[in-house]
Each structure stands twice: as C-alpha cells, then as structure tokens.
Length: 117
Length: 114
Image (cartoon, rainbow over all chains, first blue to last red; front, side, top):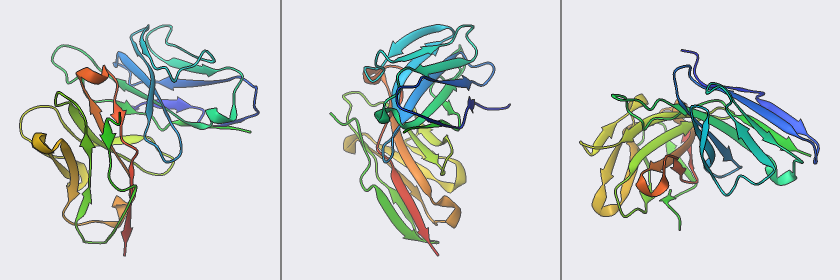
C-alpha cells in the first residue's frame, strides 16, 4: 500500500503562469478529493470525483481552476493565470465507497505547496 | 456560519500533562466527526473518528475523544503529553448538511514543553 502521492511537492511560479498538479490515490479507491489549505487555516474543499465523474465543485473553484480524473485513477488540478492569492498547500485525498466498507475515511497525500511570486 | 469551531489556535502543555483540544460543531443533525493531525510539511493523518455507537472513541497514539450531542462537542484528549505530539490538530465534520466533503476547523497547534 503506497498511500496517496502528490507531485510536485513544491512549486514556485510567477504570477500569470499556469501550473498543474498531479494526485495518485490509493489504487482501489474510487473517490478522490481536492482541498486547499492556506496558512493558519484548515483545509477547504475544492472538488471531488467518483471514478471519472466530477460530482461536486466548491464556489472556491473559480474559472481559472480545472480538475480532471480521465480514467478514474490519477487526477490533475490545473490553475491558469496564477495569482498571489493562489499560494497555498493543495491537498489530495481518496476514499473507497463500496458495499461493506466505511465510506467515511479520507486518506490524505502529503500535499503540493504552491508559491506564486 | 462556522460549522466547526476549535477553541484556541495554540495550546501549550508540559510533557506528561493532560492534553485537551476543544472542538464544537454546528449542525441540526449529528454529523460524523474526525480528528486529524498534521506534522510540518506533511499531509493529514486520521487520529480517530466518530460515526455511530459508543460516544467515547479511542484513536492512535493514546488519543481519545468523546462525542457529546447535548454540548455539540467532540473534544480531543490524551492523559499524558509526549514531545512527539507537537503538531497541528484539526477537527472535521462530515454529514448530510455538508455533502460528501469534510469541513474542517481552523486547527490548533499543540506545543509540548520539556
């Protein structure tokens, strides 16, 4: 069990550039979540997928943000035209929703720390 | 409206002393409740959870929490703090009002003094 992995761990970019982050969930997990965590705050929900379907998006997810999970496995989160306010830790989590399993636990990756200069 | 309130953004205890981290939630229906721990530059690790059944829940590393519906609270405790407990702790809720996502409190940084 390799856990949830995220790449890169750190990203520094200039304002106006586009960035893309990747998340690899635990292999059998069918739900994948993205959260954003700013300094001094708890994680805030951005979006989640059930397999390849994006089922919910937060109002925090502006038009500059897009997430995909094309084959129901890994996911990417892209931010276009980055702004300084996008600087945060981006966390990915996954869970298994199936008959006979607890759907409540989300397992988190180490996060990608984005700094926009 | 704040869904999860963690009282005290910083808590300092001496090694060996009781740890008490407070969490209150606002919900018309008792939600599922979680405590996560985050070490510097790492993701979140689940300490314990309450879904149904026994209201006193035991977790990893000697932590436990008690769900009190009448007080809408889910405080985290540990009888004796260890230096390795120094980290940030997040209370979170999940339930019908919130959909399938976790809603987190702002976190409490625990400092353990030797």
